[in-house]
Image 1 (cartoon, rainbow, N blue to C red):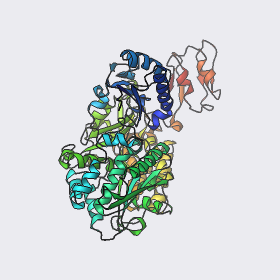
Image 2 (tube, one colour; image 1 turned 90 degrees about the vertical axis):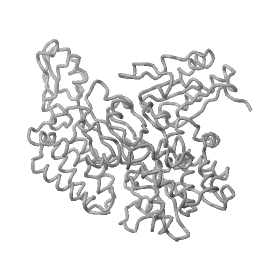
Image 3 (cartoon, rainbow, N blue to C red; image 1 turned 135 degrees about the horizontal axis):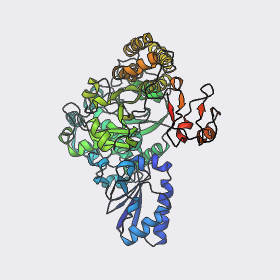
Image 4 (tube, rainbow, N blue to C red; image 1 turned 180 degrees about the vertical axis):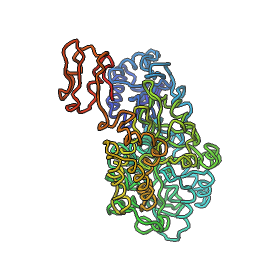
Amino acid sequence: MTFARAHILVCGGTGCTSSKSPEIREEFERQLENNGLQDEVKVVQTGCFGLCALGPIVVVYPEGAFYSMVTVPDVKEIVEEHILKGRVVQRLLYHEGAEHKGEAHASLNDTDFYRKQKRIALRNCGVINPEEIDEYIAYDGYQALATCLTEKTPQEIIDIVSASGLRGRGGAGFPTGRKWQFASAEKDPVKYITCNADEGDPGAFMDRSILEGDPHSVIEAMTIAGYAIGSHQGYVYVRAEYPIAVKRLQVAIDQAREYGFLGKNIFDTGFDFDIEIRLGAGAFVCGEETALITSIEGHRGEPRPRPPFPANKGLFGKPTNNNNVETYANIPWIINHGAEAFAAMGTEKSKGTKVFALGGKIANTGLVEIPMGTTLREVIEEIGGGCPNGKKFKAAQTGGPSGGCIPASLIDTPLDYESMAAIGSIVGSGGLIVMDEDNCMVDIAKFFLEFTVDESCGKCAPCRIGTRRMLEILNKITSGQGTLEDIDRLEELCEHVKANSLCGLGQTAPNPVLSTLKHFRDEYVAHVVDKKCPAGVCKALLNFHIEADKCKGCTKCARNCPVGAISGEVRQPHVIDVTKCIKCGACIENCSFGAIVKA
């Protein structure tokens, strides 16, 4: 057997794929062959490394050189300089700091972005080729399944999961071991395991990245869960909008069957288990477990009243255990390393780690896996690198449309289930959207509510009608037609929808509105009393004005105005006709003298 002296890892996640990482990988193979290195150096397609803002990412081992924003023309230089001559290409290394032009880092783990992370669910993402089962096996893959089937009873496995303190990472945070115990206690000979991969929160891509980078971890965990509760069939419900994840998951299922890790008589123990994929059509409500189950059965995805709970009567009327992708991804690690090792991370009631999709007004966009209890400040300022362009951090939205806005005054709040609930927000599935001083919080609430209204299944009146009435009030406020009574009416309506909706989607839909009303009520008042948007976002409340003492009469603003609303002579102050102005902002973007302001 010939061992490669170097490995070139090329990110194959969705983000990097969209930036031509497949072409980069092909170019590496071509350049290596041109230099006679095809037998000495191996090119490996991986999943997401996490630092999505700087893709495509290439890491060269054994040095661990971390190259970012690599292009196809850069490949020749990396091969000729680094691979042939042993000289790291400094200009392509990830540079940490303002605008990513600060200190260069030759190693992934030396960066602030990775230093505070603890990768459990993401342990193999960016490390192995997700389409090669042998690479997963080399990193202890299927060892946990072998241990469970040959050394543990079903109850012993449930006890380990319970002792670990693992809670559902899909948003609700329900203890995983307890959920498994409920399903195990049912006497029905037919039971099902389902995996929720219907990731619908705006800005969330945790589950997608795990399926793209480490699909075998989910397959292994579902099989362990099947053994633990007495099930022989599993279903992964995944959005059809995730083509790379679906492809790699199917490849992994086929490989697991070929190796005997799925199917009949696994490890010669007499235990049978298999998995099938079911594609969702992108309905946010199908992230709710009863709606997901209804969709798998072939019906329109709508939630069901609970009880009965899925553990008692779920898929096809049979006892069913449902967890999301990230929850399952933790299971093999817990079995291999012990419940105590997992429970040692995090807080007293929120054990282990949590993956967050960090996005919005943040320097380092990407996936972050941190111990529960890490503060929001650490994530924003240290891992995330702060808000770009010197802007001040204003708020963070956790939990997507179901979560709440956390103001800058609460930036030292720990990210765990109890601390988030105490301030009116949730950890949720892990979306974390950062906002700076230029964001209008009323507009943010409206954005999330527009999403919820569009995604409501319409089954119950509080959600179907109530969210739409809430949105109408928000539109009235942001258009300058609102009153103080509208704010009170909005708050009252939020509480009604929250208390009376059938499922979690409707029950949590008011959260973005309620949290912004709580922490940013002054902005609502400014919209209705002063008829102004403090952040200068709501167009109906804006007017653009040219300050005569600053205007040089360069005519650039007039030449770039799409509706001809600006007039004036060369070298003379210009003026804006507010009756024609569409408030697009093109004039501000093109003014070199800072003469145009929002009023």
